[in-house]
Length: 258
Image (cartoon, rainbow, N blue to C red; front, side):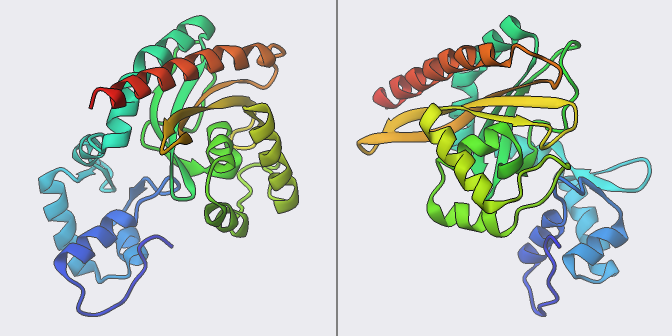
């Protein structure tokens, strides 16, 4: 349970962070009592903190009385150097991919054991997906997530394997099979999932690699989500690879001029 703690004597800051930590991708909107339960604090304390966080803009109170993360936190998060630079550099390439395919295009980075979606472009013709900008979804159940997991340190992989969740009946939760898949992703250079995060969808993703410290480092992942009945998924890989190389080239150029 996110943010659960009954440790006495916590600072005001730690209590406010516990309130914010109560929210996650499965619980983006919470009531006062739900936040108190998930944060492990009394209702009166949580009520006071909610008022302060809402006044500042960290949270928003909906008409039904529930709370959700406010725009100000997202605006601050976008200032993180890696996300800000990657989004700015990648934006025209994502638009090119979407224009060429008319499908939902994702840009994601790894945040711990989750895939953080930092940009998304979709249109009226795009298949509905669960991801939004700011979503944090399981690495093992998404195309961009599997790309990021294949490039992650061993300790991250081990942690993911210990907490595999079944998002749909098609999600790979067998550690042996998942390790084999990750090896294939490293070998062929792209990931493909079929209805592992959302029924009725297929995703394809490639890494965005840059040279750092004498070797290539995966800075993010670029992916497309299409309806599961599509039969031309293979043609999407070269489109993504061209865009990923362009993003990598621009990132390298930006670093060279620092």
